Length: 457
Image 1 (cartoon, helix red, strand yellow):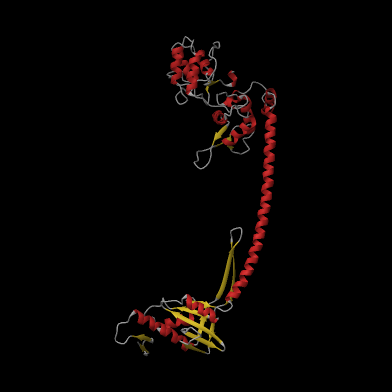
Image 2 (image 1 turned 135 degrees about the vertical axis):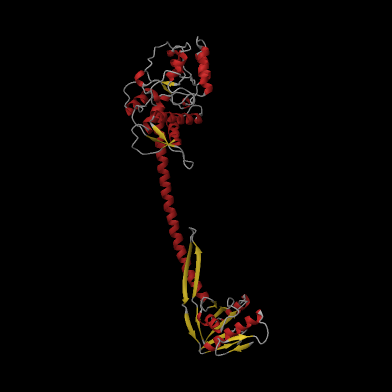
């Protein structure tokens, strides 16, 4: 290598009439770095900080840190290279009085663990300068910047008192973690006591409710009705919409008129301004806890409550929540009076009314015929019995009727999805075929398909 120290270009190294090799370039930069430090006799050192950490019982990481040395410039009285220090020979040693700083420089290979161990035994401050990312055509200025000025490419290999300081800092850390653990245990203990108190309160509340339900179930039925009349302000005939009998409704251990009125009183009557959501499962559990079930028919009881809520919705008392795949269905009270809201009906068209499907319930069809005014507003019920129940009951009711065939065809054609707007339309259609209108309407009523407005009862 030839040192180029001209007057026009920056001083640099060049090969003598040969193509530069990787090894030669690295050796040249390494030699230049040592020479720069030997000539300058000063160097900027990075900070030295120690950090210890541990984990608390709560799972959090607690950290302590201490700065042992701030970034600073150190000036030497003189520097020497390749001087043996006991059993190692650093690239450069800087001297200042009795103090020494060992400096290692690397381009490819860092100081290994064996040499680090030897540095620890010497107990002398040591740093390492990284030259690996210097360009191969780096000039003296770039190498000087790296060796003397930069601190980001320097690492402490050994710093005196580091282990002692770290041990002392860890003692402080452990004391703080112990305090944090004690505080955490106290918080857990307080939370446990509060949780146990809440649990006792919940159990007490549930027991009070269970006891109240048990006392209520033992009341005479007349007393239950009296209480319901009082709470709902019923002075006359029992509301027809609070007495919806069905096979599933019979699974509740109480008459439908009682448990349905109790449900209406508890969740609907006077509740339109409460702003609370009526969750189906909550109401089902309330009915079952309040009245009990027969023969473990819990599912039937739940189904009956669900059907009754759908019926109250059809009557206009409650509204169903919009469809949302991320939450359960609920209802909101939109009409909380005792009587259902009025409904608007289109004018009845007496012409061209085609017969439609119907459903059946277990009721008697042998009641005496009555004459019904064509102006009476007959209403389909909001929910019907199952089709199998409907057809089975219809067969029993019309077994001895002279209009057996016409009524059977009519009931087979009717369904909740296919029926005239008004039951009277179906009765008029059958009347044109010879079936008296009052017979058809009574037949529909007996099967649980039709309701008459209260004014017509």
